[in-house]
Each structure stands twice: as structure tokens, then as C-alpha cells.
View: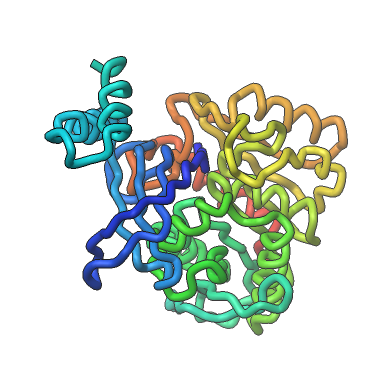
Length: 102
Length: 247
């Protein structure tokens, strides 16, 4: 089915697309049909810069288990950052989110 | 036998008089031919949908697929355009009806037209084909596994789709419905409900439910493809259009 279910995130992020680096203005995360991954549904992430047109986009398509592994990887990286490099509330939130996933 | 066809990108007048992109595939014989508006699925105006338009042309129909995301992402690749459109919750129903009306007008304006036009849509386009047939004067319509005809999208889903079964009273043409027995959107129960309502209203319709197939069984480039169901489905489509659209 087409879920259309979408999380809209406002991130401070740069992404590299076919025309080089751009500053992401919007990020969407959704579980729906992939374009390329040979799965019926996938967890998709789009980094977008609408002011530069629809083609300024970096897209990821992951199967559900891979998406969870990526999320774990991100949280683990943030939780392991040496003290002082990221705000403590970010590292603490990462540790707290990681615990139930372990 | 002369069997040349022409397939090309054109511009047509869509909803509100907007110029939108469309893919037109038509036999080059003088006709007369019936016309088919192909309504693409959520992943957009992609190569596989254009191939469907060409398949109709090869089989003696003029087919046009409007790019429903022309406004959001002019000139963008289909996947980039679909990403923008889906983030916005899909295509508004009123605009879809206007775009399909424009596509049908452009088919009827062809010198080879026999004046008859039908629609076919896949996935979200299946619901939109049903919607168009309840809103426009058409000769035939095919709904391939369109969800949310009788039910609402689940809570929290930003899809701007509402149930449209109440519009069935205005269905202007025979409807062919092709569904997978293992699909959950629409589920076999929902398909049965559409069948019940159309029967009660005395609207001519023909439903096929394929065992061993789920959603998107026509999609040749996806794991959901089920050749047996798709082949039988294509035969049902050409039989149906042959009865209602062909000269």
C-alpha cells in the first residue's frame, strides 16, 4: 500500500547530491514503496532543499532491519562521543533511547 | 500489417487551465481508436507507467498519462517529484479530476479518436480512476487495487484521501476492478463492500480477485509482481476495454 506516513524533520545538515554539496532545508522519513530497493516497502529518508528545486535531493532506502541498525548506529555513535564534544542532553538522550533497543 | 505507433511527451491543459506534462502513446493508423487515460501510481510518472501507455497504443488505443506532479516538480526526475508530492500528502482530489478531464479532452481531440475514453489507475491511481469515473463523463474505468475507496487512511497518516464510496451513485460508466486476495489496502472485505454498494446501485461492474497476489501485482519492476495475476489482469483489461472503448 501507499502509506504516505511521513515524519518531517528540521535538521541542520549538509548532503552531497549529483550537483555537489547542499544544505538540507527539510528532511522526511517515511515507510513506503521504494524506488530502487527490491522490497515492497522500505524505510526511506530524503534530504531536500526545496528552494533549489525537487532534484536537489539525497535519498536513502533501507529495509526495516537495516533502518533499525542505522538508528542504533547513530545512537551508539552519539552515546560514545567523548564528553564535551556534544551537548550532554544530546548524548544523554542517545543513551536513553539506546537502552530499550539493546 | 502497418503497426507503427508514436509515443512522446506533450503538454495538455489540466485542472484550472494549467499546462501540465503528459506522455501520449498512440497508433499511427487513422483510427478510429478509443482512448485511455493512464493514472500513475504514487511513485510517479515513471518508465514503467509510460510502458503501460505504450502497451495500450500497441493494442489499438490512444493512451495518455498525465504527470500528476507537474506542478510540484516541473522537469524533475519521477522519483524526486514523487518525493515532493508524497511529502505534501498526495494529489488533491479536485485537482486530479481536473487533470484527468484535461487528459480525456486531449484524447477526444485527436483526429483518430472514436470519442470514447476510459481510465485506468494503479495503487493510489486506482482510487483516482474510481474518483474520475464518478466525477466525469467516461465510457469505462479500471481500478487496480486502489485503497481508501470505502475506508479512511489510518490515524496519523497525512494522506489527503477520504472515502469516496458515497460518490458511487454518480459512477458514469462500467467499472472493472482488479485486486489481490492478499492485499490489505484494499482488503478483500473492502472490495466486497465496493461490490455490494455498486450492485445495490445497479452500476455495471466486474471484479476479479487474484489468489496468490497482493498489492501492486502489475508492477513488473517490484517484488510484488505476480506474473500469473498480471497476465490474467491484462487479458481482463483488454476484454473490458474491447467491449466499452473499441470502435
